[in-house]
Image (cartoon, rainbow, N blue to C red; front, top):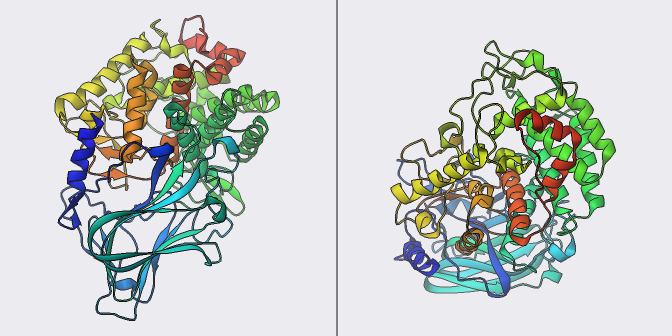
Length: 610
């Protein structure tokens, strides 16, 4: 089936020397020797739906949000003729025919931001440094898709701007052609910039610049967890302690508390004996450093902020954002389970002590629901309460019982039991990132929902939506689904794309991983991971943020929230398919505090997730 998809993608990719509409990936054959391509930059421009492509002369960005590379770094232009570079919808062109003495091109940072000279890319171990050597891929190839006439200089530089590798690709009235060059990783252990330069007199257009990663483990389930974990880890690497909301943002400018908890839990999973991707010592160090940072945050009524900003030497709530009950629930329960997994009883006790200080009686709205949180002023309750069915509400209710095990049941009326709000995928699966108890069909005590049946029913709705409304598209052909929530197609706002909404064509692929354990044939998930990797939507830096059902448009943003969902979901799937003990589920079962809270909501003997 993949080969028919690949042929169709190739047909769409190149036409008459220029790209067809939409940033279609140049499809790859199955990777030889486990070589997987990671796009550094594909030169497409996202346009708002319904607006025509924009011809951009000498611009320094695609649009206000997508001014970053596919690897979560910044880029820019160089050379005396830089402002003669034109950026069309799917190609960037340097036409220097009339300027025989001028040159122009682009630089792409390979790690962090260009001004962060201490952050470099080690081609022998390109993942964050606490990932152990046996699990580090190597970068040993570079690929460029270019057309035109003249000399195209490719160059890798160190932080001082000194070239450490360079090569000339000569084009002679060439159509778009893929050129692959070999690299010696041992000579590229402190790389900072990957540059291309059109030399004087050239007229050269580029579509894509990529690096070839070679992975030591060919297992697709392992690949899914490793790359998803590395994706969220890059959002923390080089920062000030918390996880950045997006890899390409400046450290401390827009960091996120709940995702920091997800990162700690994913790190504990990576340190499990079966994987040994991270050492237990490094995992405990990361856990404790995170706890120290978050414990220093202002927490009115015990609630943590969703977003934080580093101001005057410390983290504070990001202006204009809220103190959130759901985000506090995600952070605290992530940290409790991670501490139990790492046998860090001191940190576990400290976190539980903070939870016990949350006065939930002061967080109730007049209708009896728990508020979503507090406004930035740290006083005013947000007017909406937690009454929608799904994982968010359940985690908040669990936090309440962790805070006060003797708290009486709330008299809640759950909206549409068994159906996530607007059919939003992640809402049906969030709770199962932490607890095995929602695999049962014993009804919960709040909404009387049989969770396994409800989740399976929603999974079928997700799959049926694609087959009913998008038959014949790329998503239908390879079995991709995921009407969930995240960044919109052009990357400048949050968007919900649930199954209850009509005309949705944007897939957030985190959902297919979050629901993977529900599939009757796990091999279908492995096949999908392999197809997405070959096409370019599951590259070494992790899943793309979103992709349209046709595959003609995708957003390569490295966002930490979805990376956290993906890493934890991929871990559970890996444990299931390889028959590994599920250490997250085991820790949740072994914690007497979590078990006591669970029993308030699910009248169920807790079963082993291992």
